[in-house]
Length: 54
Image (cartoon, rainbow, N blue to C red):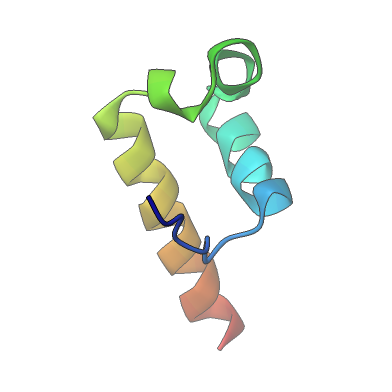
């Protein structure tokens, strides 16, 4: 099974997780334990940040 390359760095994902208040879940149980809603919010934050920086 091939592994896809991540577009966001782990550091950036962790930064967003901290802002969303789900970092403890990620740290303790991994990204698979984060709800779909919170993952969607994380993606939205990344898109907003990318839009501001371009």
